[in-house]
Image (cartoon, rainbow, N blue to C red; front, side):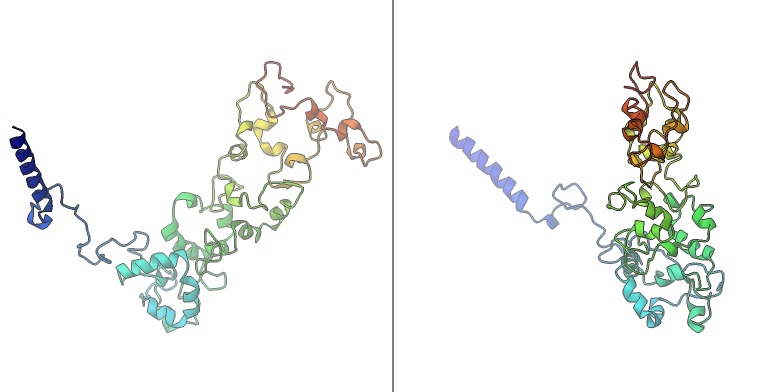
Length: 351
């Protein structure tokens, strides 16, 4: 019996081995064989087939020439005609994000617009290169209206953070996309900004705000731990200061969540706006306060149970009449939970 059992096992092993060693091509190719490799699209055909059939990148695959109202009859001339004169611009552009995407799309479809996808059809400009307006120029003195410049960019970059560009303070002041961005050269690590960083780009116009970050108490923007766009959306929002949230407090709560509440005992000025007591960019007072304590508190709290001494700068340590209540933490020495309290005995924000 052991002999027959061993013989049977040997026969089964031989059949299994032969089945595995049989060439895959000689087996059933209708999908029933589990050893067949999955189908691929490497043999796909058509105008978009390239490198074995992978589809072209969707961002530039079907790019067309931008519309230039000042040259409505112009026809596309192709990248070779543009680079024949603008070789230096082509060299600077070659390492940008846009150039990398356009190179892949052009390899997939030679009819894809590259330079003309942003600058518009170039036949009229090629015939008369000195006349302004025949090509979309992204400068204020290039002869192209600001609306045409931004429309060219928004042809691809519409929606998302740019939903509220129309009507925003930047749009109303005739800013062009190229005032903050430079898509023709890789000057920054992100966003193709015109300066090396987002903060430097914003400071080009907002010099007064940038100087506030040099004060003794400031947000960590100069240290590189945050950027202007952490709080603001320069492309437009539903509020005047271009905050990324609906209110000042919601913006502050993104980082200062412990101040959000709700609290059992609320402090009305805190709930109304953080800007009642703090300045958001930088201050020479402690904790970004708009005025030193207790003078800040006395702007609202006067003639209370405390002695009605109205503190002023003469009561500072360097003043004519120094006062220990002013030189210390003042009101905050006792009212430490000034943003709100959940303690049953905390209506005066002591605990």
